Amino acid sequence: MSNKNKKSPIIFELSQPGRIAKSLQPHIADNIDLPTHTLRQTAPLLPEISELQAVRHFTRLSQRNFSIDTQFYPLGSCTMKYNPRGVHRLASLEGFLQHHPLSLEEDSQGFMACAYELQEILKEITGMHAVSLTPMAGAQGEFAGVAMIRAYHQAKGDTARDEILVPDAAHGTNPASAVQCGFKVREIPTDAQGNVNIQELQKAVGPKTAGIMLTNPSTLGVFEKNILDIALIIHQCGGLLYYDGANFNAIIGKIRPSDMGFDVMHLNLHKTFATPHGGGGPGAGPVAVNARLAPYLPIPMVAKENQHYRWLTEQDRPQTIGRLSTFMGNAGIILRAYLYARLLGREGMQRVAEFATLNANYLLTRLKAAGFTAAFPQRRATHEFIITLKNEAKTLHITALDVAKRLLDYGFHSPTMYFPLLVPECLLIEPTETEAKETLDMFADTLIAIMKEAETQPELLKQAPHTLPVRRLDEVKAARELDLVYDVTRGA
Amino acid sequence: MSNIPKNLRYTPSHEWVKQDDDVLTIGITDHAQCMLGDLVYVELPEVDSQFQHGQECAVVESVKAAADIYCPIGGEVIEVNEAALGNPQLINEDPYGKGWLFRLRPFETPATILLNAEEYSKQVASEAH
Image 1 (cartoon, rainbow over the protein chains, first blue to last red):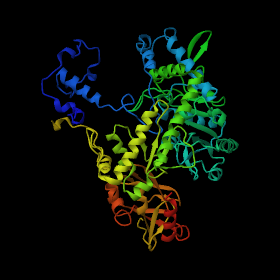
Image 2 (spheres, rainbow over the protein chains, first blue to last red; image 1 turned 90 degrees about the vertical axis):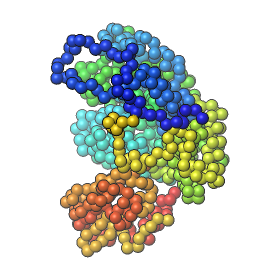
Image 3 (cartoon, rainbow over the protein chains, first blue to last red; image 1 turned 180 degrees about the vertical axis):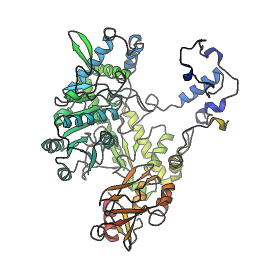
Image 4 (cartoon, rainbow over the protein chains, first blue to last red; image 1 turned 180 degrees about the horizontal axis):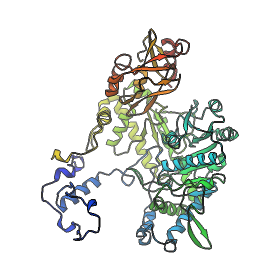
């Protein structure tokens, strides 16, 4: 066994008073040009260790990273696809890397050209009228989108519209974004086939409806077939349609949200456009809108005038909902997404959707043949699908959590579990287009092997994981007795 | 099969209601606590606050999910279960006893709106996908 499985101390536990990494110590100027009251009086509590100890500590931690670069990561709804090295190399060119956000416009034309062209590409693939790249995550894109819906109704004096409709299968961020923008949320139930229940939708719409938030394909891994009817119902009552771009990887280059009747949307560049994510970011959630919402887009945006790129500000866009970031969103992510789009080209993007869908359907078919229960057995998968272990929970007394934990022992990241909430004991599996058939087969074989273990040695699942630095975590205790701050005085 | 006592009334959204004279005690059903899993957080209404039938009035949260509790009957809150606030596990361990959530003085007659044990059992069975 490698030392990968050994529990390693946290860095404060290595600390010895007086130990220091001299060669890396910063030089502190004699005359510090700051007001006295802002200067600290006592030294900060930092671990005191040697340079080699620090190097070993962080190298060891880095070897424990689980990432798309090391293992299969079928985390449904997150689109953990390969992040091409070529894109990273180009985005790491000195001119981009060392560029300061406060540089003059004439010295920023290279980056601005990339941002402008990405705006144009995103307009093209969404069918929308205008794009702002600035939101720094999917949730911020949603916030911007709903804020624009509110601004639109308010500009029309239509202030009675205080409800946003959200299907019960929606991402939790949808209702959260609506509430954050001051709306009430009305939940719409799903029918047995995984579509929005049209009768219930018709009952819910009215003069209070500001809009509806949908993702298509839905979080249930099926395409919302009634989308045109839904659009008609919402538009007829004066509401707007918001498209959550979380599942855009399934349709990129194939259909455009504008053609489905959507008025406003966000894209997760970190999902569909292959920029690194997981572990908390950074993300990018550009928003795209049709002509009637265009005046409200967040700033800054990039305009092209006579071969010169220019930042658009409040003066250019007086009705803007404002700024969402200090500068231009997560510039490094925007750059990578642009380069990724250019590498793929129009035909490449269509292949993304085709192979993402093919991979998901191949995996679903193999698992169904092996006896797994699909949540919607009559429906074809989109780019992802749901397996429910409700039968196994009854007969074998194992849960989706047990299977997820056992997968870790075999070197796979767990699929998304217990989401969407309306499917019991579910695993939401998204293989993405970048995985080879052999990897999909290995994953299917492993799931099949784990179900055999569930029959013969269920304790292997119940106690998993066995091979990781920590065993099964007590999530309940962690939530009930939240303890986030390490007490340095506790010592080694 | 989860425990569904005969002497209680139920809502389709998995609350139970117990009537003692003109006071109602409200909690979540055994089925609901089982579906949610180990609860880690509870938010209860304030005493003296008033709710309409079907209005969100409390929240229970597990490691899996957060669920709203809907007021089964319009009324005024007269007491909340402080013990459950400090120890949400009580709701898992004893959903119909120590795990009650709050007490209500109703504005309307409960009988007409709520399900009996048999009707609720049928609903739970049909929901089991």
